[in-house]
Image (cartoon, rainbow, N blue to C red; front, side, top):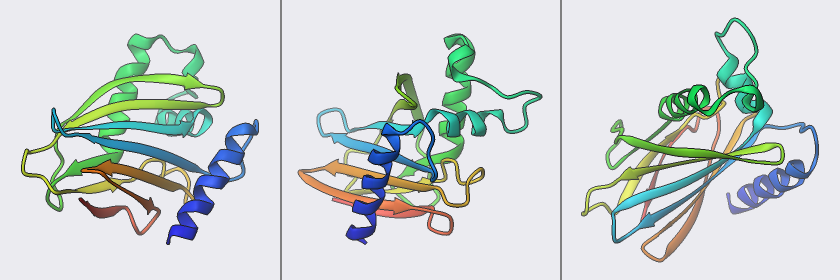
Amino acid sequence: MRRLLALGALLLALATAAWAHAYHASIMEARLNAKTQQLEVALKVFSDDLETALSAGQPRHLSLSEMAPAQLTPLLATYVRRTVAIGTRPGEALPITYIGQQTEKDAQWLYFSVKLPAAARGLNLRHRLLLEQFPDQMNVVNLEAAGKKQSALFREGNEEQRLSW
């Protein structure tokens, strides 16, 4: 499993440098802030893949670079809340606070947080980002909590996992 995660991370790093990419992946960096009991999340996704997802069901293709923040922010917040669910029990979806977005070359960083209960010693994560658009989508998650680092890979058929600390 670790080899697969390392390979996925390597492929994502190589593709980020290229103009076009032959595979579909995202990387989520999540850190538990023990003082605030907030899970702070940064999610990196290719811009063109995100445009494809946001354009689904729209009358025309949406371009991230052409949209005003007032239009883009609600679309991104809704998409994150629809494709990512974080809870302390299976099936639970705690409220996601969408913070914002930042462009980095051909990718977007999406920032959000989730308030966890003080007694939480783990979380259930459902991660379906871009799986509706791309059957080969890989969503890598790196979690740092209580001094422990761990990684998980989410793909079609493996969209929900338990991560403990």
